Length: 243
Image 1 (cartoon, rainbow, N blue to C red):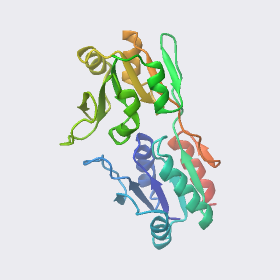
Image 2 (cartoon, helix red, strand yellow):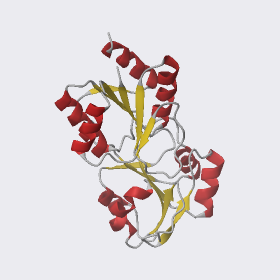
Image 3 (cartoon, helix red, strand yellow):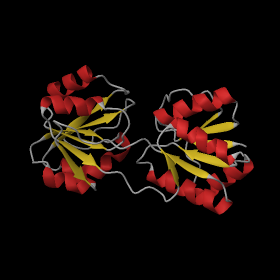
Image 4 (spheres, rainbow, N blue to C red):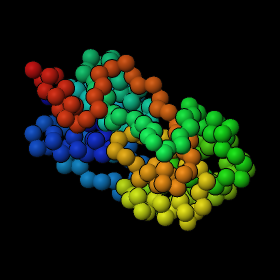
């Protein structure tokens, strides 16, 4: 078996460590979005494939026999494309996706299905922490009208911020204390974030402590395929494929 691990998340790195320890022949693939990605204990490729045909050719040329897709829950385009390629090639495909966040006592979350809905619930004049990733900053132009936005990104950039506001540069994870201090320093009124899921997120805990409302962008609908939520479950699935 030669496994293609679509990576880029904490779950992918944890799974990579298990696969390396077990000697599973694996190629990990990163989107190449960040300038200095965290290391993997596996052969690694980085960057886009160049489209569906090029990705299919890569998978054929490297004799891929199964795929575990552990990309971000909002990486809809690459996940959909990879699933389609696996279907066409007759390869087993698994989506490893951590559980979504659930609001708890003291949280003030407003679920939104699209970026445009944020502009309908966040009042003009608000100072907003846009924790949805620099790559998608262009999706929030409607929200930016009449509001001050601060957008998180991992890497420094010479690119000017497109709206009234600024970039905030930093690599997660962040502590509760760091997030609470940031929200207070920037006088944030609202947080906008994607429901990435996983362990309790420090910015959401800080929002709860400060009584700040959160506009929570819902996840896209997943593919109708095999799904698991943990690296351990992914290993169990993989063992069944090699029987």
